Length: 390
Image (cartoon, rainbow, N blue to C red; front, side, top):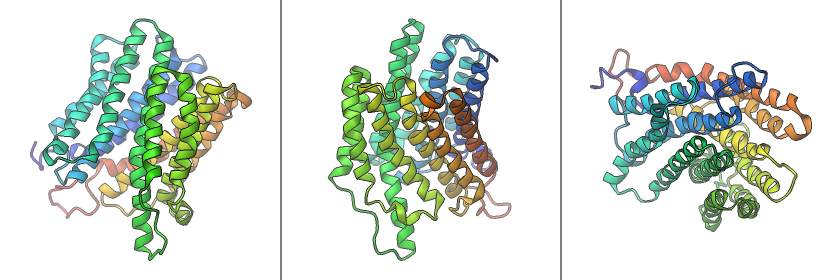
């Protein structure tokens, strides 16, 4: 497609994929709440479906939108647009239709398994051409995430629910690793830029040994979660303070007036909290069961993906980097959702109902604020001119 023929929504990866990610975040949780009230029971285990669709529906779309937008920025190349982007979006949509309609057909499973490898291949082309070294790690994580998805489908087809649950836990830890890699780059970098623009004399600390140790611990937790969960518990217990130490020195207390920045620090703080809760579940009865993963799932992954989608949408559509009332409320709702979800073992069903409502509200607010931006040309595009930037 030529620039003039390409619809705005297909001019950069973040546009269709962030929009679809937010819609999926709402739809999956809403359907789960309805199922728990006896409405519209899906085929198979509804909780396994819920976990899979949040990780490989919502998070996969958000991650793909970020990578297809960030990699061109890293390499100074044109954004992925037009037909290649449409093909990736089509895979995601076909998978969702097939997996939501009933017992999944082979074509739905094939599309779902193919989505992440397709995104990785599209994103890898400019990295390969430019020989970008350290930028490969996020794509390596995507490759392992694709394997986790294939393993989940195989376990479901073979009627091995415990293996399917282990695949989802493995995927959760891989996404946590991705947050450690990408969140650990952008949070101090954006904070540094903000403080420098305002004449700050104490920038975030420079990268040092604690960064490598924290990322290494996250990688070890992910692998252990797949191989030996008990070892994952001890490693998660180590990862929690390492990520807290990494966060220290990023000057989060100096950006409390800037919700777009503060939420990044909050998302990364949830990473440390989430690992501690996971360790408590694997090593003792404190947070036994699937509740334990929600410090990472809702707190770290939910917060960081929403924060990055909001910031990237504002920045890449030519809007000022200001959260405003709607996004600030969305960030607050998601923090409350994470706390409420974790209180489930003690507060009972009311806690997950409240968490579901707050989660849905957070992404509905994101769509109200950012949805029109994703469908419209850049705010700084010339009147009547051809939009050549994402």
